[in-house]
Image (cartoon, rainbow, N blue to C red; front, side, top):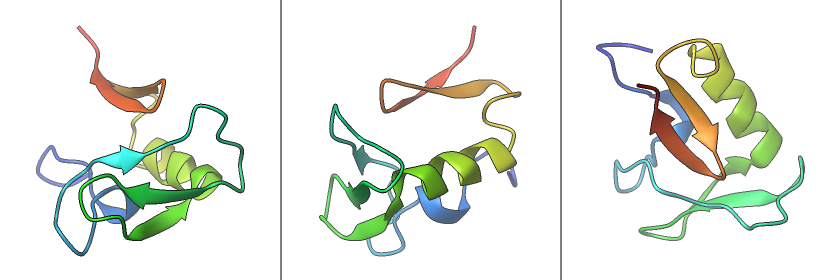
Length: 72
């Protein structure tokens, strides 16, 4: 994480947003796309691994039902 913002695979390189379209039944090999522009962002397992690598599971953010949530 740099400058307090999540980066890497979670941010869409096409429209610079962090809005993931994640199906309710997403598995490790599910293709995840940008909710704004529809471009492919990566596989669900890879995106979760990238999020964890940035401190997402040990920091102030976590993935909760496909949404990035700030912990109180």
